[in-house]
Image (cartoon, rainbow, N blue to C red; front, side, top):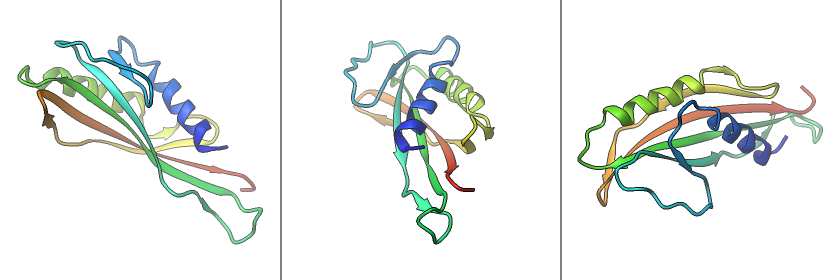
Amino acid sequence: MSNSTIYETLRTKLNTLAGKPSIAMENEDFTPTPGTIYLRENFLPASTVPVGLSELSSKDYRGIYQITVCGEAGYGTYNLRTWAEEILELFAVGKLDDDIYIESGSIAPIMIVDGWCFLPVSINYRAVYGNV
């Protein structure tokens, strides 16, 4: 298990979202199309800590997978909120795969910057891996 593996699992899950808008993936070129909604992802791992005191202890990986729903300002927020709720439903609390669990999800307040409206959705994950 590694943060890279966790990220790829979460990213793969996001790509299963039915009818999804375009996704601006981390560190990949992306130019938003005016008048359309898009998603922007960010992987925010926290410190990985051992579960016990031994060098053989399991490791506890935690963090946030943030998907921001983006659209032009001035067009209302209904469609942005609808996509945010779809994302929360996709990443429902519980087991995502054999090692990764979704602990919670939340929608933050809307931010408007430079003519764009941003609605962040935070998915809190946890993965314990090793000699459990």
